[in-house]
Length: 295
Length: 340
Image 1: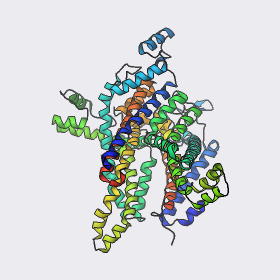
Image 2: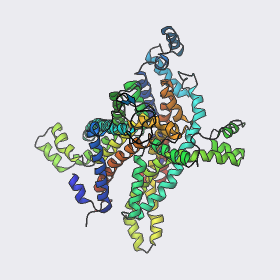
Image 3: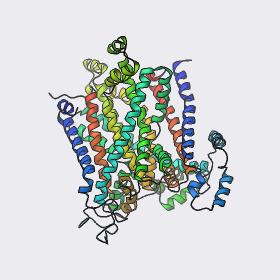
Image 4: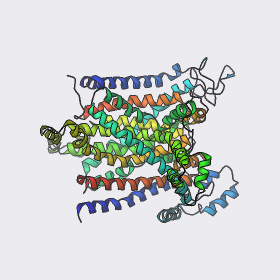
């Protein structure tokens, strides 16, 4: 698929794809190599018996300074990529599995079941995902978060908002595909419903999913960060999380200390930017009105 | 019944099951964690005191009884009292709801002022330099969490340049002056305007700039993208080509023929954005200490007062359901294709 995107794009669009891929690549690499890249641990306060100190300016042993608690900012920003990657994987897997299955069933079975599922989906769709995340965080971890608790809260709430989106997209495709001649042909030769649904219909109904996946991934990061910013995130000694660090940086900003807020913030922006750039390009290529082919 | 009236009636009646389902879900989700008193005060009270408090608040009765009482409360507008500081939720809504409303309206105005013209510009210069820059801006506006935008604005414009205040809705003096008038709306700009005090009006606006921009940019990017895509679509539509061949000037084609139909989906999106705007308001209010419902929600979250959280989230859900109805109604009035 990646090759097709490159081949079909030109000019600014190609630059967008490449920039997006580069950003996502750096993000994934940083997540994999965090233990090697980061100068210190995410919960490390001292080195060789000497405390790092609170709100130290960038320089020396701390290229991006230290936080008010005395963590190394660069290290926590780098370790944060791991947490972000985990939440993306968890949220996307859950939403894809649930949404595609329900969309397939709703579109294929139709009738009353279809109407009920679409109705529920419409109601969920309008609900603010951050508020849902707050509720889920309370249920999952009573708001006192370990790594698993915090990840689960963000992932489950993002799933609740995105299952309806996958459902809509897949359902619309399934309804279209179901009427095609090859489905009738499969039925005539005696294929069962299960086989028709998963082999014939599903495979032809996932065209527009990649775009939704990118939005889903971005939303997972933003929701986790939002929860963290509200003080409902992951405690600093169980993992590094950008939203939590930004929450702690609010008083720093008022005092003119920039280095505790800017690095984790930039990390969120670059990651979401990379994913969104890829998503936008995919969108342009699937929407013929927006497509620009290489001459 | 004629199409429009039927559509509006059905759509209006749909609000009730939606709100019912949302409120029920919120109630049971919150009760999965136990009773609100233990959650909020469990580690501060002796078992005996706890039992007393539980009994007073009625939390030792069967869950179903509590649920029915909660539903009755929602129906009559009585949402109970907070567990930590025993304030009435209805009062809370009265005194902080207007602040959130004010912020949301400012943000929407900024989003429309920024998003619509820039979206048109991007469509006209499709795939050329201005378009690329604007699309990048739109993506950045989405990719940057609203609280990070807020912190950056604060850092640059309040702390470094000292152009705007760091936080709050008005200076202390102005706030007192506004609160002491005989009839207050709670919407500071209106109150200041009615007091006829020019300095107060300026003070209120001065405080509103950064929070509104932070929240407004979030939505502006979404409007920009939508207008751009729609306008590109209508600019190549058959009726625009037909008008062009009749000799309608290009300028008029762009500004009138293609623009109007491209704007209808903006109305629908406006409704969907209300949900995002409310979520964003919680974060923006926390960043700027803008004392609205979002700020209070964050406060009660930290205090682990889940009665308050439950009520506030339920209220947000109702607001979203009602605005979605209003938006669908407007869309149906403007565009006959939407009706049943």
